Amino acid sequence: LLPRTPAPPARGTLLSRSFRKAKTLFDAWLANMTAYRAELIIWMLAGAVPLIMMAVWIGKAQAGGGSVGGLDAPAFAAYFLAAWLAQQSTVAWVAWELDMDIRQGNLSSKLLRPIDPFWEYLMQHVTERCVRVPLVVGLVLIGLLVAPAGTVLTTGLEAVLMFILGITLAFLIRFLISYIIGILAFWTEQATAFDESYYVLATFLAGGFAPLELFPAAVRNVVEWTPFPYIVYYPAKILTGQLPASDIARVFAVQLAWVLALVVLRQVMWRIGLKKYGAVGA
Image (cartoon, rainbow, N blue to C red; front, side):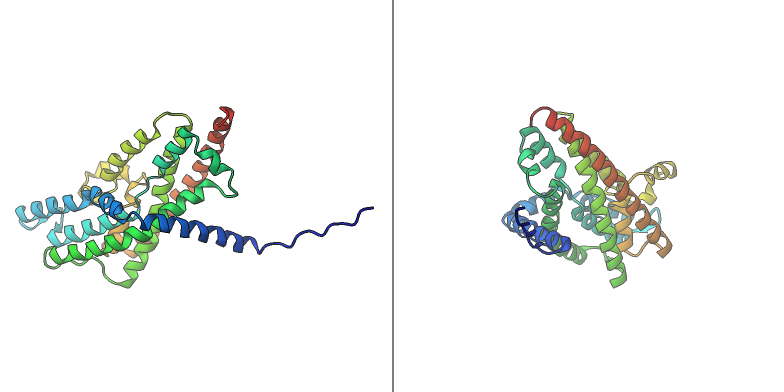
């Protein structure tokens, strides 16, 4: 009998290996993102709808006797600054990346790596936040200087911490929706067309054009059943302190439910899509 070859020693625990992979991806993508800071500023300005609507609603409030729907100029300024911060913190373009990788066959090389491409796309967005968010916060602080007197963006540290939690869940919702749209490229030639349509719809329903309390009651009741207000509107209301504590707990629960539902949907669509992708010899 041949002597038994001892098994090679394990290279750390599963947790440590996962940490090393995550750190490698983070370092690589952070270096990439910091090389394109000027481009990030252009993307930020391209998503300035809440800032434009802030000026519109402030003007409307001042012309309408001081308030509209119970919101005065400082309230509109605080909401739309917080909404812009929320919007910029949840930007996701993975649908475009997936669409290109699937159609051009670049996904094949990613599938050969010992890690699900999902994590690489996610880390790409996380590192972009590390570069984008400080710039956005700086612009928001400048906005506070020119906002109407009495504008208060946040009520304190607790609101900031709650906002960070809420915006993290909101980002996951937005990222997963974009990822699911990108997966459609397994079956369609232009998944990005769906993402463009989504952006227009989501900007309106998420509260980018107006706070949800200004929506007709029937419309708002329908919107509440969608994930859109939990991406921008509710995180913004949490930061400005305009949401009761009981409602904050409900918002977090709904956000988490949407994340879990979208994770399952993404996984199912990904497995089915990969079978079709492999069937054509990619």
